[in-house]
Length: 411
Ligand SMILES: Cc1cc2nc3c(=O)[nH]c(=O)nc-3n(C[C@H](O)[C@H](O)[C@H](O)COP(=O)(O)OP(=O)(O)OC[C@H]3O[C@@H](n4cnc5c(N)ncnc54)[C@H](O)[C@@H]3O)c2cc1C
Image (cartoon, rainbow, N blue to C red; front, top):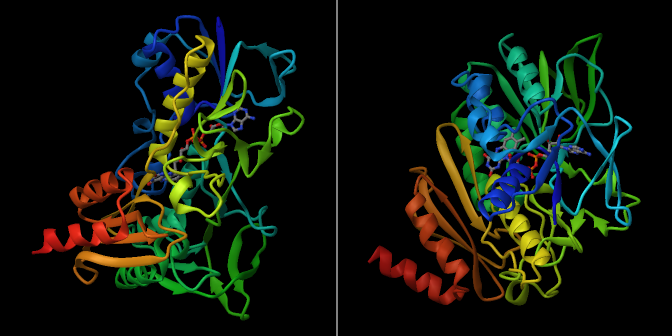
């Protein structure tokens, strides 16, 4: 294998490239990215960048000299348009094609927008550095800001804009913030957190129109209420960037469908927000259907899966056995000065129990169980506890054993 192409010049792609070099691959590595930038970090876009603590210069994932030392050929501002597996070519939107012996797909996901109001000034989604720059400029206008969607991105934007002194209203179709990933008990806690910080919240409510002339002026809700808005951030989820692979012959569903080694086809691996794979750690005991796959939209997974995909590509090329990718997923979200950390699967769940601390003190650890096993943990302001239960999830601890451990810690 002499030449590896990575499509997607961001977190998963960069970590894959670094791993290829660290594991001794000294052939050509080309990284194709449709954004004009070299790899940068997305989590600060909804946090430090919006609060004004950081400026754009702090976002690159690696300093220039570190990137240069990796000897990578970046082709930025260029989108992959198609994959020809037989010819081993990626076709690009500048009319050129680039050949590969090995391919890593790391095209991530993009933010969904509403089917209306997209052309109004002041209406945003948040995925890229340019989105964040526009939102930051609009936040500086002073508001009011309406955030549509109370998932992690929406809740973080609401938190950051409130910290800047804006009047913020968060609108959500479900009955609470982050209800899917946290469950009803911690969603209720998060609702209190946002209320205490002064965020106005409308739940069980959808948006029927965004109104204005050239710039958005108000948001019309399904109950007929109109909320005044100088700007709007839509945070209603993401979709994996797979369209360019439509005719490739790869299996595409909600993401690039891979096997347990992150392999989509011989010589072709996928990683990060775009990859869907069966995580063997959860399959055998947590799901009725052992083939059930997961696609994770979080930072740590993009790092770890980028590394795993690169390693397995090299192992395959050397005819060695591949290593299953079976992590305990982890993410964090910063809101109103608190760090919400979660690991494993918190949904679906059969059991939920708060085991340490208290919701009212904003310092606690809660466990989630499925089919008799500990499968997830959420911890606020208590990283040590998170790590402890994370390793118990990795060890396939039963729900009963996990509760016993919690009791021992408390006694
Ligand atoms: C505002 C924000 C805040 C976040 N905060 C957190 C957080 O607090 N904690 C956490 O765990 N996670 C967080 N995340 C999620 C985390 O940033 C992502 O999981 C991570 O960026 C995924 O990395 P990736 O490389 O798989 O995909 P991406 O970072 O999406 O990168 C994919 C790249 O591929 C490019 N691309 C797409 N299609 C093509 C194509 N056809 N040709 C060429 N290039 C293409 C994209 O433009 C992009 O540059 C946040 C994300 C956002 C947007």
